Length: 387
Image (cartoon, rainbow, N blue to C red):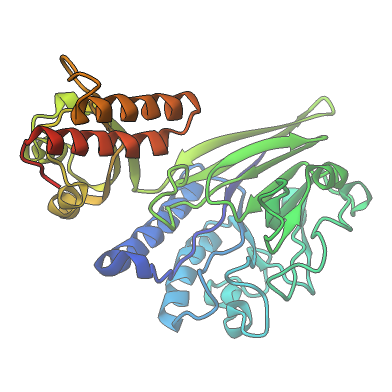
């Protein structure tokens, strides 16, 4: 059995300009996830670690950061666990490539061995004889690929080895979604490679599939690069086995990221006030939690909520909190004034419009008209209105 750990899209050194004061903390979380990835590789232990691109967020990194990464890779070298990595689209192998500026194998203590290999346009595969394995990693010297990296890859014609594994950083073609991506492959191309396993990077969410006889998977980012990536935070453990001439590939997920995600729906009739909502959400406070709160249901007229104030009040208690108000104002209650009155005519006309929009499935427009109904009803009835 061959045991492999697959990761990608670590994006070490990301600036996170959108996170403000939290940016430095998120960079540390990403490095902690990379260290946890190495910990998993050592604890299993695995035979091989694959990094499918974007280990670094850009080619501009201070030497101390590269040395910090090399120190983690050295732990694998010292344990005689082999590592193969490819550049991605963020740390692309162009003239300014970080892999040209720094000799990562030398910094990790792997000079003169096959314990750490960086595949490049000039070296697109490596044979690891001790593992009876060939790793193919077709990459380019430009961010945008001139053609599919799988175009000329067919493991059936590759040098003899029991296991044939591929490394690609790019998107599987999805009509209407991936045409603008820098590197695009198709499932037909994956099938034509006849690889045993294709380790993919570029998508930050974990997913897997099969094309022909080839098992492929995205490991996803080991720690979310953006705080809306709720399917990140994992690495993949891949077990390749051959018994009685039959090959099997099993993929299991292992969590290494700290960030957790939670979605919470609250029915607004159960929320007595804004302070009560803040107190309720504060009970879930967690510095590792991204909390997405959605307020639903029919909102009582007496309930006065400002979601931006709720978010500001709770911001320091979560990694991030978002509160969205998707509730709708109540329609008219009780007896409606006669239709020959201004208020009666207004209510009937607007409620009819709400019904039309809801029947047409235009919930957004229906919500806006409900708001107009609520305000108009209060104004025409002489009640105090809070805007």
